[in-house]
Amino acid sequence: MKLLTRLILLSAFLHSTLTAAAIPVTVGPLAEQLLDLEVRAPAMVVPANQAVITAQVTGLIEAVEQDVGASVKQGDVLIRLDSDDAQLALDRARAELQALDAQIEQAAARLKRGEDLIESSFISDDDLLDRRTTLAVLRANRAAQELGIRSAQLALSRTRISAPYDATVVARAAQVGSLAQPGTPLLTLVQTSAREVDADIDPRYAADLPNAQDLRLESQGRSWPLGLARLAGVIDAAARTQKGRFSFAGPPAAIGTSGEVVWKVATGLLPVPLIVQRDGQLGVFVADGTTARFVALPDAQEGRPASADLPPATLLVIRGQSRLQDGDKLQIDRL
Image 1 (cartoon, rainbow, N blue to C red):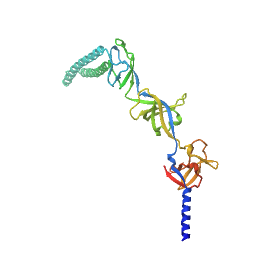
Image 2: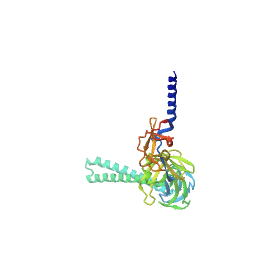
Image 3: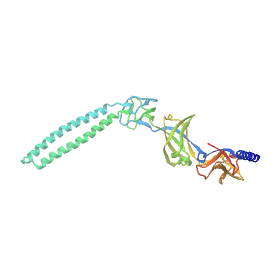
Image 4: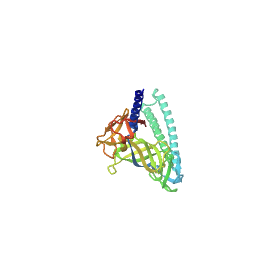
């Protein structure tokens, strides 16, 4: 009986000794511990279009409907030019068309009579040919006159200068009573219905932009999510940067907002706190079941992140590794 009691006590002692020897650690998959590099690039919100609105026809400026600071919608009238001359030209072209229609009607009737008389030999072949030619010429003139009417209508429409898109008027050169001619600057518009973020990108990180994580514009403590619109394929020789354009994924920032485009790039490097030194080598501890295994990192340098040639699912010891030696028993807590 005493022997059995001693065996039970010895077993309990050994169990408690082994349990006490297990070192508590926290482990997590290698893939979740790799560092992300945060990249920043100077940026500014720019309009998709900024245009100087000019006259397309000659005319006195009759009215300036929108002034500096005004917000306009696409199609809103900006400038009115005197339209009297353009209206007269259109009326004249329409009258000339009516005259041609009358001539065509008369020529068609003469041709029909000639065709009826040709069988009775009361008209020569040459006379009939002349009648056909006259009708054909008149019809060609009518087609040209229709083009003239369209041109006159276009000129008349251009005496009302309208906004090509939703915009804000930022500058005015037009003055009532001044003569506007084709190419005369009148107003400057900045499009407000479409805007982008223009950024100067370090070429080292440009290739990672299509797969960038958490892409955003930051300015004065605010943040706007972005998407990559396009990336220039040319590096600026002086600045050593590439132009990137980004679109807003939600409500946009105001045009002219300056800040930084920020995104994250996966580096594939382990953070410095996970790297320890054993027997003159730098490396990390991994959990092999409940046993600690030291894995040396040949390219590691003290105080710097390092790459690890290990499967992404490898369980890495991320807390408690400073106390470990190769082969220690582990009391594992999963992250």
